[in-house]
Image (tube, rainbow, N blue to C red; front, side, top):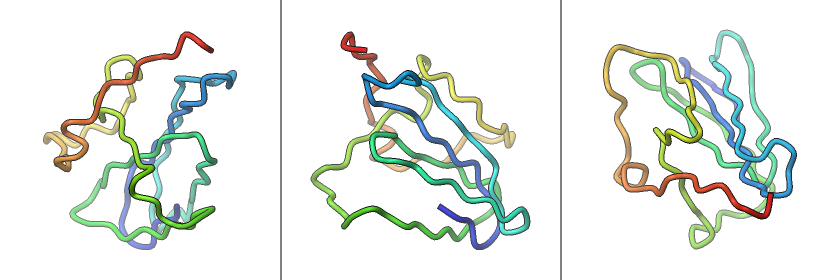
Length: 109
């Protein structure tokens, strides 16, 4: 994903049980000013928080959109403990993200 206008905090979580980084996350600030983008390989969960009033982002995907294959993780999952920038106000969360399940580590790792 690349940010075209304003700024956001972009996060990827490795949810591949056989991966050496399973259950770990990486996050970075992206803005039109810093020009950063992030490639999220298959098998990683992805989310972001807009850091300004609005943001425009460009996604490139490896395949076509498959809504039936979508899944979600709880944005504030205590096991993942993602450290997001504190904006001093609670985040606005979609109804889908508000009811997403917690991350449950696989015993197959």
